[in-house]
Amino acid sequence: MKKLFVSFMCVLFATLSAGVHAKRWDPAILDLERIELAPNVYAVVDTLSAEWLEENASAATSGGFIVGEKGVLVVESFVNARLAAQMIALINEVTRKPILYVVNTSYHGDHMYGNYLFPNATIIQHEESRKYAEEHWEDDLNFMLNMFGHPDGHDGMQENSPRTGDILITDDTDYIRVDLGDRNVEIRQFGFGQTKGDLQVWLPDEKVFWTGNSLIGPAPLVPWLTEGGHALSLATLKRYRDFLPEGTTIVSGHSVPFKIGDENDGLDFHIAYLSALDESVRTSVENGLGLMDTVDAAEMPEFSAYDLFNWNHKQMNVPCAYKHYMAMAGKELTEEEQAVTQHCHN
Image 1 (spheres, rainbow, N blue to C red):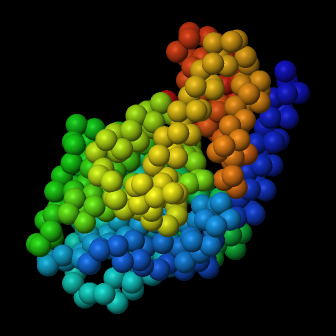
Image 2: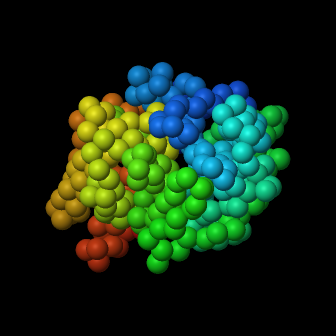
């Protein structure tokens, strides 16, 4: 078993390195562009997002902004000053109205490091995002540097300084309304999607919905369960599906916008993936399989087109679901299995 564990860990890091370096977005050189979704409503995405989706790859962080009579609400502040400045420039090309609010949909650094570049704006976060930033800033920064950093530091991430939320959403809050004058923006929380600090932004009249990383992107992209919680994430996505009308435009965490009902509808695809993952892993645990055999059994080829599938599915999602069902069954993990699943918290 020790040899299997060592092999598993080697595959994990080799797959991660190979996958990320094959299609790794670079915050030092990437550019952002805006996509108009409705009058005065814009998605902001990596200029390579559409090209990368054609290659079944996710891109850099997606966000957006909404212009109202009183001012602007921004979704995501991005990973460094360079990209935050690009967001501000894209806004200034449309309006010179003040930026009043910045919403962070997650506590991951690529969604919130740039907060300090919006000194006059009110930052809206989930309370878990502020808690995470206050307690784990260095941990998150090291993770982001390992994923996207440069040895010489020109990625700009080490220049970031923490700025956390002024308005905090709690688990007991369904939503708050932000008044921009001629339109109200709803800041919602539907539950755990990828982190405990997930928020969503909803424009009911225009039917535009920002999800953050609870939805990575259109099909064939599949979830990154960086903390585990596949069952919680599935329940949250089903709540999205029940809540959102047909034709809603979704701005996901790491790709181009898509519409519910489109051929590449990422919401239905994510739900189908998580449902299949749940069934496969639950059956394996019921049949007494260990972690390695559970990974082997969860081939799920209908979801394997995503270019990071061998990493996020086999090395992250399946092990976390396995840990979940072992706990549900009251079964103990081996020492090796505990090490492989230590990132799984739910």
